[in-house]
Length: 323
Image 1 (cartoon, rainbow, N blue to C red):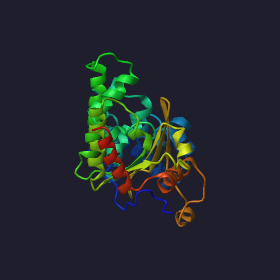
Image 2 (image 1 turned 180 degrees about the vertical axis):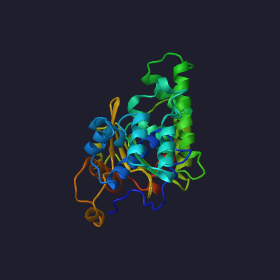
Image 3 (image 1 turned 60 degrees about the horizontal axis):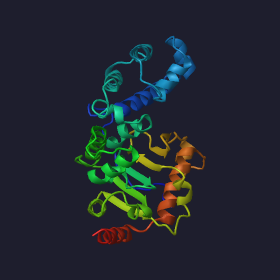
């Protein structure tokens, strides 16, 4: 079995350029500092002591656990005597990290904290695999379908609620940022078969949603597959979570990421750095949360999913059912 759910061999997007997202810039800045510190032969403790900050300050910077502080970044550059391209890169990344994410102005109030890292990284990924259990993937929802489920979830009695309109607009902009690129990511959307049956609105709402899924499934960079109700062998474990996503960033980019969603919370697992010995192996033997969740996604595709062609047939049948 391939260790990669999407066989991609592409360079990363320009994650250290002016189009870098805020979230990507914070992560890239931390990775750059760690790389420079390692090259200088320093531990986190030694660098922290040298620039008069706590160990946790360096740890948070390198792990992108908090907003980078200007005085810390400047102290790192000064102590390591950085100049030229290395200094320019850190300066540019720090500057971009201070700018807002696309959702922080208009949509800040309706963006849950647990979702922000995912929303900040989707558009710079070159590959995206998602698994959704109960509803159509947010990236594939029509505005009408989204309105129906949001109205129910928010317990709204009015269809023209400003809050609902804002949330629907946010989903549409999210979709545009991922799919509206000149070279969109290669996407695989895994959804439970029950989303074809679970009514979110009227026949017309469901029919239009199924037609939209069918149209998207025929695009060359998108694959849609359904986890069959009678083949929930691998899906049982995943169905206990609210959803999963695997983001790939390509050679020379950010570390791959797995997102696991629960009820009003989410966990993020980065692909760990491997030793030269581990990299030489066809598949890492070290057990970690990233590999465990990635293997689960692979098992869902391999053991529980209808084929892409069969999934398209299921969508055509759903369109007829709601007609």
